[in-house]
Image (cartoon, rainbow, N blue to C red; front, side):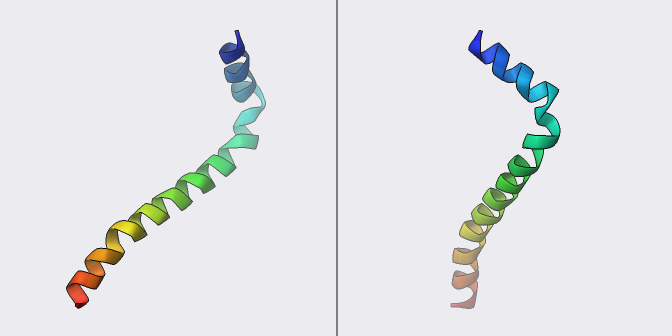
Length: 47
């Protein structure tokens, strides 16, 4: 019951409210992971 209520709340009024923070968090996570993956490679290439 609890899971159904949460999903219902997210579908009804949560699309506009919760999409932007999730997109921002996803962007920050992708940015951080790309930095962690690229920076060591750049140091190897430059060094």
